[in-house]
Length: 290
Image (cartoon, rainbow, N blue to C red; front, side, top):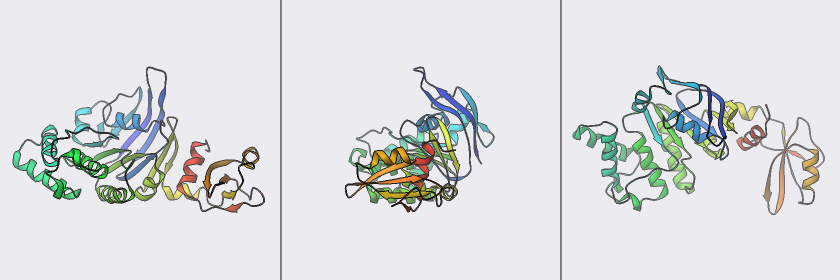
């Protein structure tokens, strides 16, 4: 089952055009949607999650029209938004049972089996009777994945899942998402480049409502091989380099700016080949390179 999106557009009443003819083919597995804040990622996710209407375009999940057959889509959908609400004084076990009822799991015995299996899968079984208000950020995200898996969905949409997590919780979440992605389409929206590099075999970069790249991370990296150069400069030298070169990123290392420049040949004295990263791809694409 594939998710096919063609020409999806959305303009808000205030005139902001969040999506401009977005077209993507999303196969089973982990698919990363990478972009800065305000790029249109959340609008794209909410439309696919049947929470918003598009102005133009089509989207199909297998044989189901995502934009018109919303009830059918919801039967196949698991959704973890960037922020989701829970009853803070309710245990994870009780809350997951309640959400199972809302998702149509009416049989009590079946609900018990489903909720217990999901809590074990996301490693929350030992804390199943603990109030959700006492959960850490990572535990809440793992609970969010558990509720998204109710009903064995074929499409799971995850919006900015690792923002604010410490490295240990992020790694646990990576492992959980990778396992889930072996069985269905998992659409991961994030502005964290590391998330896509660690998890996804396919990806897209979206900026200002437009798709700037779609393909595999490896192909994206290969497109810049031998074309990224770096140099440590002083702050006083930085404006001159900005005028003379195509600088795609600047970061401070030990108090000195280190610039990454896009060029087919050595851009000048003191520049050395840089190890190309997905961050270089990201910055190059959002800067407008075709």
